[in-house]
Length: 355
Ligand code: GTQ
Image (cartoon, rainbow, N blue to C red; front, side, top):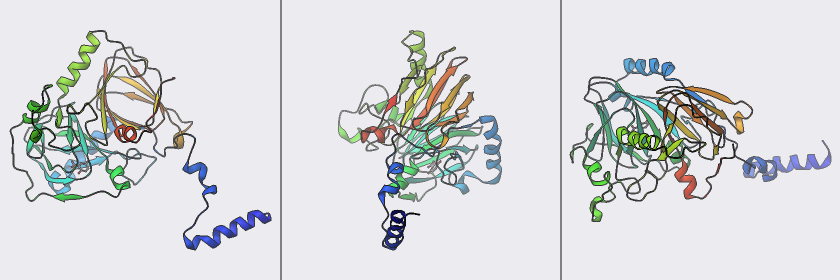
């Protein structure tokens, strides 16, 4: 070590007890020229995951577990219950006759139904029945419980902003006094008020969930029909995305919740998409069809491109700024969600569609 190196080392050592550290040793890591996500691309094939979901149903009840969920843990973020840096995801199972007790929390949740029909989720006194492909919101601080009054197991993808709220140290939660909340309005009330391109005239019913969409269930038959109509109409096919629509808050035209965006896209049979990058890492759930996702990551996964063969109910995660290229052997429908609303609110969201 030369003199200056020794002087620097002694400066660091001497000031460490004062909780002082030199920026110049870490500046390049703090302010990288491009995103350096620890998050890695990963796929969970449903055939691999389903037996464990089933076994979870044999070892604990939904009521005892409170939420019986197998967490999708990103291999680049072990032990952190994160699927990306900012998001949590998992598969929740509820068996016939079970309930998952009512609680509320500042974390926002979304559900995307993967398998089975006949379960419900209730949000602030109104139930919605789940069918595969339905997209359902649980806005921040709303009471919610889940139950299954049908005859088959129901599995859905949970997406929550848990890591974001933890980063902000803004998490609060409480249990309700009753496991199943009282029904205040018949099923379909939210859809009638907010789901038909009509809206309440006066404020009282306009924003029942604050900043989140007043519509809390987006049934698959309607979302799918919209995409199918675009396909039939031979609408222009985006070279990267195929036909891709975003779920909206009908009261504002904005995102359904302040922290999470969600999308549904249709890749026509034979589609060979151009690669694109976005700064919002995304979690995908394959709804229909077979195809392929090629993910070329930056950051921790750089230099290790991954190819995921896609089939119904498979899930995969695409890190920030990874190049994603999608292809479809047959008509393919994909659901996805990300933290794009946060990034756009603070003006940092970017994409590159150069290929
Ligand atoms: O359904 O309320 O996957 O509170 C994680 C935390 C689901 C839920 C999760 C939760 C929930």
